[in-house]
Length: 342
Image 1 (cartoon, one colour):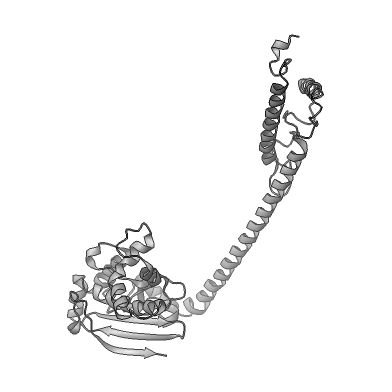
Image 2 (tube, helix red, strand yellow):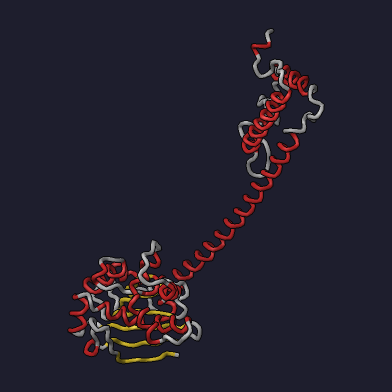
């Protein structure tokens, strides 16, 4: 057997070259152990993969199938390590590999338990939702079956409602709309963009409600502590934002400018409250930019209303736009039938 046939184990004249080679080999062993350890750990136990027969050595053969080449190579390595009294055998890979495997197993176990908790929580939410649906079916649907069967054929809502997407502001809960009574669209900050801003989900719903369903009332509902209005009031002017939220709420910039002008000496929260109501009025005026809405309002076939829900004290304010005293171009609006519900 010639030593030239084994370049990794040939006699080395340079002591430091041998030391560097052993250090490099140790790093290779540790990297292989990390890969093998990640393959062995699954769920709560070790050795559950198809590679469960692999041993914790860097050689990579089955623990039940001894390999003579591996044995000779191990002995060869031992003989070279004896030349270096400062090197402690077996210290390089085995303890660290065991520790690494144990830590990884614990992390995966914790992850599994945590996700099981989330799954149980989600299931509880849907169990509750299921009970609510079954309650609706028993107490409302089956009790008024004839009405719901008629709704299955066609809908004739009297209202088109534009409300905020805020989870605390549900028009059906607050105002008691029943199925078939109101055609609804909800968006951030309950905004109605003007006609010149192009198509959107809001004006698509408006077109269907006014031209097809021929609703008699459009009601725009705003509310207190609106996050969309706060985002609008916090935005820097004339800044091109990549945020979807900011690109949407910019539809209310005219309300923002007016609120800041009329409440210049007020606190930020007070300015936001002012803007919440002002944005409703601007949306009412924007509705008149659509010819098919303006024409029906002029013929008194359609009325446009504003509403403001304050959930801090549970009050509702309602008003109706007066077309005669309102001007789109001048941003002027006039109201009638102003009421407060406490």
